Picture (spheres, rainbow, N blue to C red):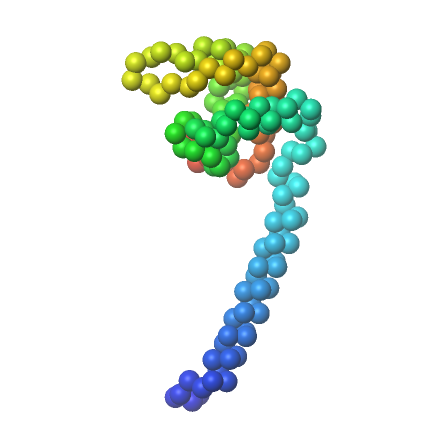
Amino acid sequence: MSETFTKGMARNIYYGGSLFFILVFLALAYHTEKTIPERTNADQLTEAVIRGKHIYESNNCSGCHSLLGEGAYFAPELGNVFHRRGGEAGFKYFLPAWMKAQPTGVPGRRQMPQFNLTDQQLSDLTEFLEWTAKINTNDWPPNIEG
């Protein structure tokens, strides 16, 4: 092998490296496109879930909370709140009661505003958070409290 680094060698490394990483990128893009439909639960979308997402967005819940890692980190993660707060047995009762009790007035605790949502809106928000909790996120968030 030559002791000097020639222009031709640099060109070959550049083109070879570029081709390698383009192929890696294409393989990862293909893998993502194949696995996303398997990991989401898009087949379980209902009108209530869609309305719940609209409530979540229109009340700027992500201004304080994160959902599947997206949003602010001021308040707890909501991607797994369904599992943390009762699951199938109790979440549909927990969330509306929690939302209606806000703000709690506990000294030294951050207060969530009262949004004055109707029972139907609370039910839709509950459906949205339940649907979100059933997405396969590879165990995100890493701890139970988000």
